[in-house]
Image (cartoon, rainbow, N blue to C red; front, side):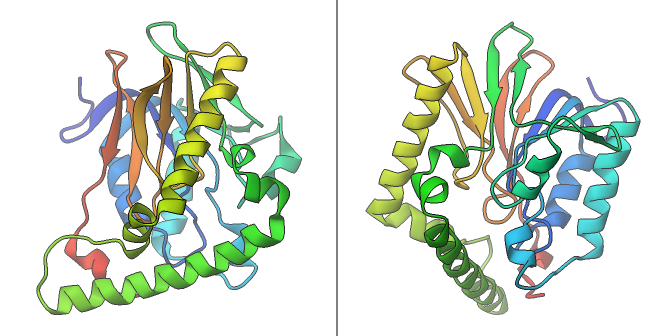
Length: 258
């Protein structure tokens, strides 16, 4: 069922790791995605605003401002919007239980699918041993990640200037090729699944590691929203109750270095 022409009605939308306040935030693509999807539930699963990066310098575009406005408008018009803070916007954890503009801030949330299955919603930084116990290493790693993303923007510009079509993510390539990163993702997924099983949940929906996924692990439905920096992915629940992983397309103008 569609609302307006070109707009798809779904039951739920789950997005994480938008990283507003940074140059790498793909806010224009996120806006395009939100314009084409209406939902009863909108879950913001952490790292929506990147306060870590903003401590080093703020980049706030008109599109990023429009993202905030659109989310607030959705909340005012009946969409249930729930924000589960992550490590990059952990300052919001000081406001757990408070509502801002009809947006509820929760340490974690529970989503009941249309089939009655119960899903735990958490950002996922609790499953990352580095972030949890070695903050200084995580901060250093975040700076290194920013350097890689900057290099990626220049490579995208270079590919575009040569007429090479398609999007290529340097950070995504590094993560897919380095065995340590692959091992880290597998350990993260196993920790998330164990946590969901211990709590008696049928599934878990998280973010944090920028590695989108939709799969069954040991009879637990594991969903990772991915991010809106590299892959531009989201999880949706259709009106029929099916969970789908959406990768939003890249447009040529997005290769421009800003």
